[in-house]
Every structure is written in C-alpha cells, then in structure tokens.
Length: 176
Image (cartoon, rainbow, N blue to C red):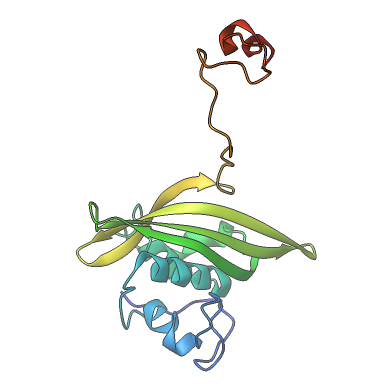
C-alpha cells in the first residue's frame, strides 16, 4: 500500500530534511515516507512522522501509528484535520532498554507557526517494534521533564532543617 503525500509541497531529494537531522531529505526521511526502507530506530520513525506532518503525508502517519497501522487508510477522513505549519524538530533523547529491546522512548520538541507566532509541543513518546517495524504507540508525557529537587527529601523523623533540635514532624512539617 504505497502512497505519495496528497497535498504535500514538493520537496526535492537534495533539500535539507524537515526533521532537522542535518541530512538531505533523499538520504533521511524520503525513503521511509516512500516505503523504500523501514525506519531502523524509534528516533528515525519519529523524525519521519514529523516530516510527514510537515508535508501533510497523512498516509504515512496512519501506517506508523500503532492504533491505525493495521486498518485501511481512508484519505477522506483527513479533510477535517487541521494542518499546521510545522517548522522544526528537536530530539532531546532517544531511550532504549536491553530488557525491552522492542520498546523505545523519544523525548522531543516539535515547533509550529500559528498566526505568525511560533509554538512548541514537548512530548515523550513510546514506540514499539513489531516484526522489525517501529510504530508510534502513545504519548507518555506532555511538556518538559518534571523538575527534581536538588536537595534530598526531609523525612518526618529527621532533624528539622531550621536548627531547632526538634524532629521535622514536630516542628516545621505542619508549615510546609
């Protein structure tokens, strides 16, 4: 089931790839979008999905989303989809585990223009490999990584940090 982007702006193979990898489109996402090769990693499928968003290749998005990949693609359903002007992708981390080699996580920021203002979607996504092919499974987290305190948590029975000599639970815990 090969399909070309229906309403995509033409992009030549020697143009920079929209995914921001620093490679040419013809060496990066184009072969994946045209189904000439599979994405070798979760990060590659993430980059190809961003490029598909930028080029409005809804068929690629459909076939790389775990929930819809096995269903027939119906392009008429895409007429309701709002096409944003995607501008750039920044991949912050690509995590894999030896314990689960067929699962991976990609933490990224995708930027788009709306009414002349740049906006960002920051997400950590889960990807699954089934029969050697990577699929976007779900968003694990929206927004940046939660901030962790640099100081260890004070236990109820620890000495109070105010210096009173009392246990934390009998001193400042009620005010915290």
